[in-house]
Image (spheres, one colour):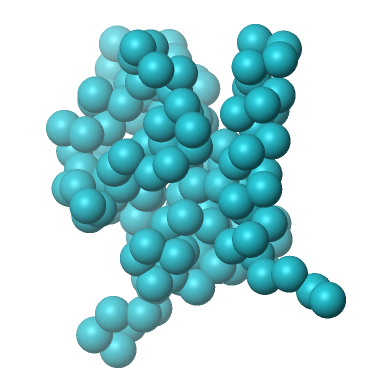
Length: 149
């Protein structure tokens, strides 16, 4: 019997928690969990694996919007840290940031449009922003809108 993706992701979350408790290291599945959860909670259509520049598609008002999805997991009591690197060389309309708790459950989802993301990443003053194409979670929230819950 073939299981659905939601059941598999549930198992992956449990294994990721167990792995972290055993080794003290994250398992490295945050991005995949974030993509699946954003699609489930917001009704997005996941793109084909390795689609250039985006992970999901949203159809809204007769338009197709492409979305790059980033996930950030944190242990209880830790801070959120930085948003994973955002690829601005490929086409996309929005970046979604899925924040996951210590048990890999979604806490919040934030969304920023391409122009706001590029402007923040191109702003002078930070090597991490300018070269690594990353910003702090708190910075991302200042240019984004909370879309879940």
